[in-house]
Each structure stands twice: as structure tokens, then as C-alpha cells.
Image (cartoon, rainbow, N blue to C red; front, side, top):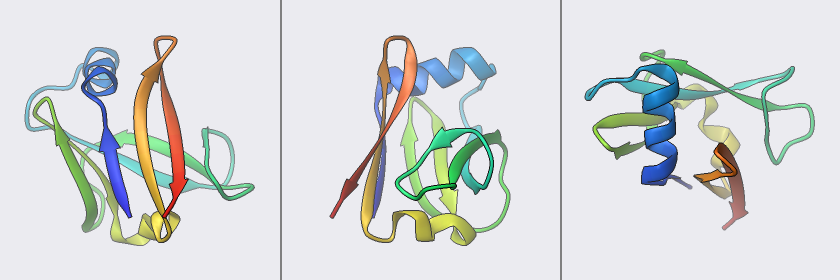
Amino acid sequence: MTLKITKEAANWYIDEMDLEQGDYLQYFVKLYGGIPTIFPSYFLGVAEGIDGEIAIQEDVEGIHFFINNQDKWLLDNHDLTIKLDDEEPEFIFEEQ
């Protein structure tokens, strides 16, 4: 299980969310609305800050992107790449 953020996607988050070097950006699992995942009815939310213990982390452009221990099950058998596509983040889940 891996989390990969491209520099272009990282810069999009930095611009859109006014992030500064050293900030943390968490992807978390939620049931309704948001970014579709590989599991029906489960979606990703995005929040600035740290909530819980970090399980998977990717540092790009000085920002710490992560998923916490509570939500790491989402990537148990998958890798997640976040890249920029048509000026919006695209989430690509690949089975290992």
C-alpha cells in the first residue's frame, strides 16, 4: 500500500487551501459524498491538520500528505496516486 502525490497535485492543494511548508493534509474515509474510492459507498474527504496516528505519508513540496491508522484499510491491497488532470486532482487506485 502506497500513497503518491505528484508535484502538480501538491501545488494545486497548496494554492487552493493556502497551505504552507510543514502543513499536514489528511485524506480520510467517509460514507457520503466526496472523492469516489474503489469501494462502493465509501469516499475520501480532505482536511488540513493531523487527526489520529499517521499510517501512510508522502511528503511533497514541503506538505505532509497522509492517511491515518483508522483509515489505512482503504489501501490494504491498493496503491493510491493523486495527480492533476484538467486542473483538478485525480485519484487513481491500483490493485497490488
